[in-house]
Image 1 (cartoon, rainbow, N blue to C red):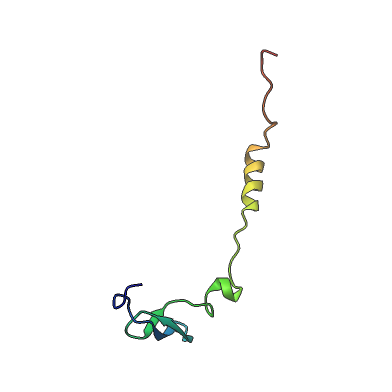
Image 2 (cartoon, helix red, strand yellow):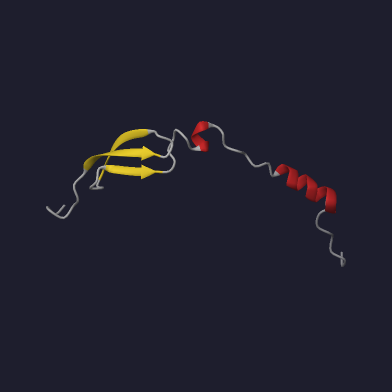
Length: 77
């Protein structure tokens, strides 16, 4: 690597909107990064994630239109 062209890699404090803070390293000069969500408050990590049920949509479609009998045989045969 060329000398003198890379930014300094400094200790940085990350501050989440929920109040959680942790230390990491970054090239950000101010030494502080503000984020909206982190692993302490994001629904995926906290287990409060809503799972969409698409199975009901399939059942509703089949009830409305019925199941098709599959591919029809050729009329020439």
